[in-house]
Image (cartoon, rainbow over all chains, first blue to last red; front, side, top):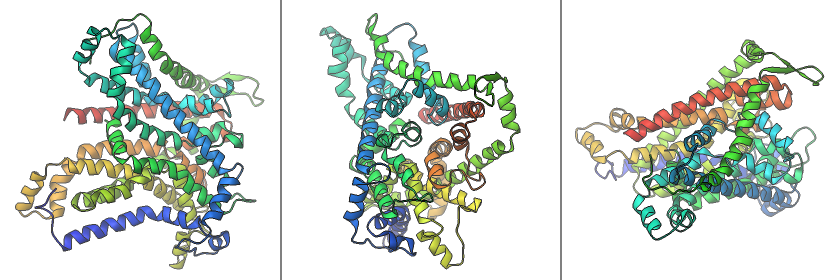
Length: 281
Length: 293
């Protein structure tokens, strides 16, 4: 660290103070949401709302989890979890396999396949939303986990990441494995997979957040409340004229919807930062 | 990029790429083809058959006041989100780079908004700025400013920008911090010995050395503002009031699903495809350069 440049005393304190102000600004929306999830509706609709938590934490969270809006929040959380894990695991598996084929085999159309996968980078779901919806509807996949997961698991980014990783693995290793009589499947399972462990874990963090936070896609294809995910379900709870869901319950739902991805990011901070910086290279 | 040692197998490689290719064809190329195909047709009023109009939908789009306004709305929105999020993040990263004690604690406190979904960010900001009950709307009222983003287009824009920028700060912070920490300390110390003040050091040495990171983040933030902020817009303003926050991605959705104007929506999808294509190429050029450094 820059011991020489750093001013001691006064300057250091000023830096810390400024950082704390910055963090306070960033954390303010969450603090307000948390406080709102622990008080009553009456306290919220007559401004100003309190700035310190109240005693209704359990009431509000239980009501959210068990009653919620059009569907109980526990069910929406479960749907979100299935979708997020499905997208994450699905992406990792198909990307590992295709990257393996492209790096370790010579076959016809290899480069064509590579470019076809590459081109999907240019087609985020928001862009092809209407036709993709039509395709999924015609396959009868509305209101199903398959419909939630499958259209989102093709990923050029993950394939690239694994391709780059495989390129750095020395040829001598493959040679040695072949001399020992290991076929392509053995080599993949016994050597390549263990060597990719950290990268798979880092990618897992990024993809889990990506999957959990999906909004537009579940909004379109889950018309049945029992298939709603929590990120889109909360929109359905927002007041529109004859609303029945109270703000403390909505804010409790917001806190619950944030919790899993935030825990993953904070808990796996090192892997997350590694995954983020590397997947963007 | 070729491996010297490769496996020979007649069918295995095809089997390995099959799952990804299948998903890619069914959910990427087929829908994209459909979009291009549909963009050349308009459905008749009864929805029974469609009529070929060639580039008619595109001509209509680019003659349409609302569509052109949506372009400028998107441009304003993206610039505001990118500039506000990046400058705040840079300020925090410079500060965090200066502290020695507790820097990892600060980092932990700053990175978690990355995990918050855009739609949830929208709900949180909507709650604070609710014209009747929101805490910040109330504070503004106390100092004599009336906040109602349901009526005032400028306020609506400010609110969706704030919510979108807030969510993106963590990401920018992480990359700026990594960039700052990669600058050799000896360079900065040499300038300090020469008596350059902190701000002078920042603008003449640190900021130019950060430029690869800054360029990279510029592109990433523009892509984020274009395509990943749908949840923010949809939860806070639904594009209103009077279309003042209808960015392009929101318009594709609104025309296609709410307005049921499939030909126009398909044509808009094609325009967006071209835009993403350009942005992706730009992104890769910058990343390419980064790699060659």
